[in-house]
Length: 305
Image (cartoon, rainbow, N blue to C red):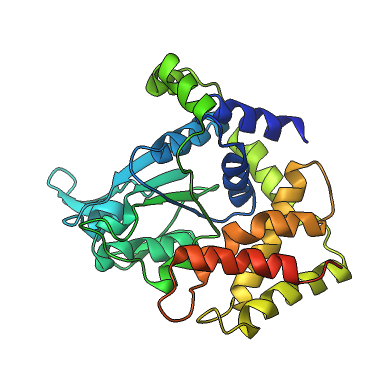
């Protein structure tokens, strides 16, 4: 595994204990220039994960706490009249950061949720008729509470599709939880994390991830996985072409983390659940658990190249 990326994973792992696969998938999402959705119960470390990644990468960080009275201008910014200059001055909102934590995204109204769509897709925002570029790199980490909790608004499919990867942290195992109870406060640990990379190095790694080679048989395997999601009657719909591109981009980043310049089938298998689960829905009244089970069966049924 490449040394700078290994240092990032190891360092984040000192704060978010026992979650190395999720940390690695989050880093692969960033290398693939995607955005990350973290769905889980409150208190399992979603916010801590975002802050640890930002500090370990030396990136400017902003947190937006989503509530039902949050307005799009609170995210994007607003122009205020300056009586001294006799002109309007734009005051940038918190979206103008390299890592933006959209905390409890599904507690805001759909109108406010949609304010992030252009930013995530185009990496720019349009405010009062003017288009403004966002920083590079730009990475949104959104947290989402389970939809059965009070005061939540389900994210529409169009917004879910903007997230390259969805992960769940879950409860820590016994050893990790004991270390949490016996160790230092997580905020204290976050405050002293040194950067392992700088923005220029990260951009170079993102370019390297795009250049990771995918062979013809490997592309056949991507197509076979995507086609399998469309052919089964257990899913309401299959992956779109954008979903297939997301799968390949994330697999390339996963291979780069391993220090390889080519994608292997195991890379696709490792990232497939994180890329596909939030884009698919079980047919009928099936819940997310049945969707996850079907994805696992697809991986077992589609033959390796």
